Amino acid sequence: MQTTRNVPSAKKIGGAGGNAPYSVARAVAGGFALAAVLWWIPFIGPAIAGYYAGRRSGSFVKGAISSSIGGGSLMLAVMAASYYLLGPAGFPDTAVDAAAGTLTGIYSRAGIYLEYFFNPGTADLSLTPLGIMAAFGCIGGSLSGLYRREAASLIASGAVYSAIRPLARSVELYEKGKELGFESYNDCGPVRDSAVSAGQDAKQRTSTASMKKKPVTTTIQAVTTTVGEGATPTSSSSDKSQSPFSDILRRSEVRNNGKEGVQKK
Image (cartoon, rainbow, N blue to C red; front, side, top):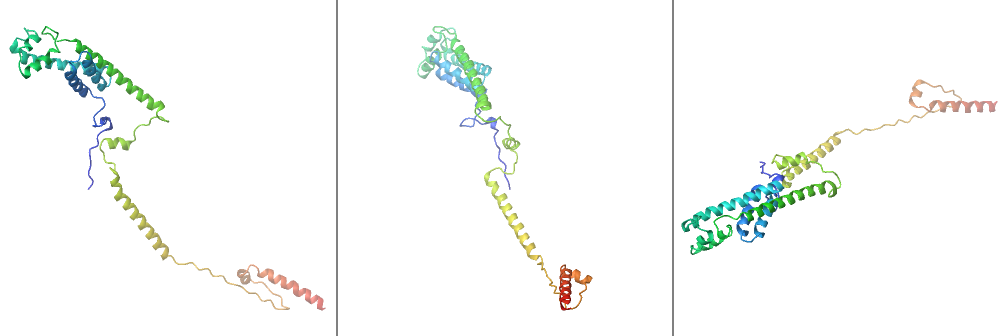
C-alpha cells in the first residue's frame, strides 16, 4: 500500500528552520522583540530593530509598515504597563521619573525601564526612537529588495550559461504533494524487480520458441551424364531440367567424335 506525504512548497522553504526568508508577520514580531530589548540604547537600539524589520520584510513599503507596526505596538504596551504600574503613584498627572521613584522591589526596576520611553521630567512618550526605527526599517526594506533584484539579474545573465527555464510539470506536482509514481528512491526497487523479471520471462519464451522450430535440410542431387562413343546424344527436356551444363557436355562430345571419324577415314 503506497502512502502519501505532504511536501511543502518551494516558495515556503528558506533558511535553516524552513521559514520563509521574507515575511511581514515575522518582521513585525522580530522588530517588536528587538526594540523591547534594545530600546534603552540611544539611537542604536531602535536602528537595529528597524533595520531587522525592514530587511526581513523584503521591500521598502513593507519595511516601513513592519517597523512602524512593531515600534507602535511596543509604545502601546509601554503605555498600558505605565498606567498599570505607575497609576497608583499619580501617573499621568505625575512625571514618570517621580512616579517610578515611589516603586519598591522588582517594580522599581520596571519603573526604570519605563523611563527610557518617556521624555525626561514628563509623562509624554518620546517619539524620536520610533521615528529612527521606522527610518531604518525603510533602509532595510530597500536593501532587501535591491538584493533580490541583483540575485535575479545574476542568475539570468551571469550565474548560468543559458536562459532560465520554467519548472517541469513533475516538479510542480511534487511541490503540491501529488502522486508521481516515484515518491522516493526506495519506491524504484519493486519497479526495477518487476522489469527484470519481465525481461527474463521474455528471453525464456524466445528460447523456447526457437527450439520448437524444425531444422531445414538441403538436398543436392548430382547428375552424371555418360556419352557413348559413336553415338549421337540427344537432348531432352528432362535432362535440361536436371542440369544446366548437360547441353554443353553433349556438344563437346559430338565435336570430338566427329574429329576422330574424319581422321580414321
